[in-house]
Image (tube, rainbow, N blue to C red; front, side):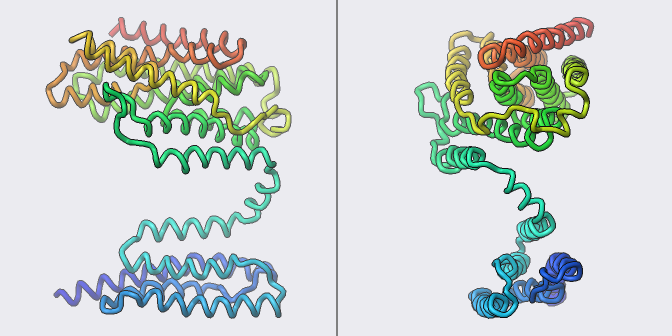
Length: 426
């Protein structure tokens, strides 16, 4: 019985490795059939065998270094193939050779039960081969400032963030440097993403996409990124629409958190964030329709060159918000300490200024453990929801253009009134 199980496990590994190698090899065969310049030693059979060889080399526990020995042989064969291609076929580039070596290690990953990583590596290789022309075309559109912006974003995220303390450094236990800097990176990253989405899809396509995906993590970060970019743009309607999409996303996120994590007696008040989300989407549609009448429906979407784009990387607004974030964190701790039972609502107010998820999730968790009454948790969530919605006006006033402030202030007040009206009705 045990031998059958082991044999079945080995057979599954070899089949998966063969399938992944064949999947990559089919693409190479397709390229070879459609163009002579893509002809190489790497095809369907070669890739299948390389991946299969990688998995096979892991099946001998008594020889743990066998994958390295096999890989050494593959490196020699690949080097010979590269030399032949360079001198006799005048073929430049090392993509095929590196692909061969990576395919072998995909097989090794399958052999050591790292199936998800092996599949991700396969998808990555398939992607860069399938869209290589698009990738080359994308690189041609980049300029030095955009590359420098990417370098700066990589610096503040990869070279600074991982080394910051993940424990509080203040006497109140509120300030965690990693969390604060993560927010700075998040805001800068959303602005960076929005820059390129706007560049290639136009304001009408790029800003809504950046707002939606960014607000899945933080609607406040999206508001700051959009407001800071509106100062040098006449497209205040589109930026206002993007902020309202971020608001709607945040409100829908609260609905999901309460629905899946809250108690059954809390579900009725979900009508409030649902109504606010609907109102936010209505105002977003209004702003985009106004932009359509002024600029034409397709003019901005198909002609991104008409949009003025400045630096892709802006850390200044993110730093400013990081400082505000620290001050609010301290205020939350002191509010809980000195305001007694009302400290929950005080914390909800301050938490709503920067991040609604923390108070929502902590309130729901406290209800489950009997530490907080359901009605108190419901009130704290609603307070944070309204504060987090209205405080966007202050962020816009601090960082955005005058045209943006006027428009988003009226829209946000309308959303708050809708939410308040539904709350009193239920």
